Image 1: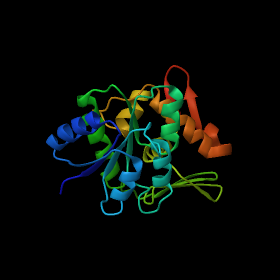
Image 2: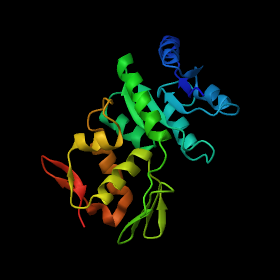
Image 3: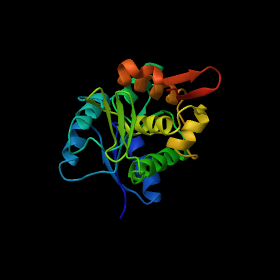
Image 4: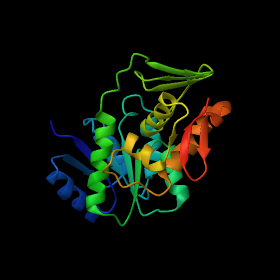
Length: 228
C-alpha cells in the first residue's frame, strides 16, 4: 500500500514540484495551500507524513503542528517542516513542537527525498524487542514498548528522535557517542542532518529530564553519553 503524504504549502510551484517528485518515488501525494485545508483533509485521510510550510496566510505551520501534537488521533503523524526560515531559533522551535525534521528553502530534491525516506522508515519501524522492556535509572523510566518516558512518576512527552537518542544512551551506559554515531543509530546513514540538530535534541532532552538532566553528559570535542 502506498504511503500517503500531505504537502502543505502556500506556494503553488513548491506543491507541484513535491507532488511530481514524490509521486515518482511511489508515494500518494495530497497537496494543500493552507493549514485550514489540510485540517479538512485530515477528516477523511490519515497521512503517513506531513511536509509543512511555516509562513502561510491564516494559521501558520507552527500552530498547525501544535494542534496535531495535542490531538490523540493525529499526534503520532511525523512532520517535516519545509521553510524559508533558516535561523537557529526557528529550527529549535520546530523541533521543540515535535517536528521530526526541519528542511530550509531553497532545498535539494535529492536531499528532501532522502529525509522523507528516513523519517518514514524510522517512524514505521516496529519498536525494538527487548527482554528488559523498561530502562530505569533513579526516577527515570523509559518504556521501550510504549515509547514513553516517566520522570518521578510524571509522564513526559518525547518526539521519536528524542526517545531513540535517550534509549541509545540508557542502553549503553558509560559509552561515548559522537554526533555521527548518534545520527547513524537513530536517523539512518542516508540522511542529511540540519546543522546542530543533534545538539538541539540533546538540549530538549535535558530540559525534559529536569533534575536528572546531568545523566546526559557532554564529552567536549567528542560527543555525548549516559553517565550513572
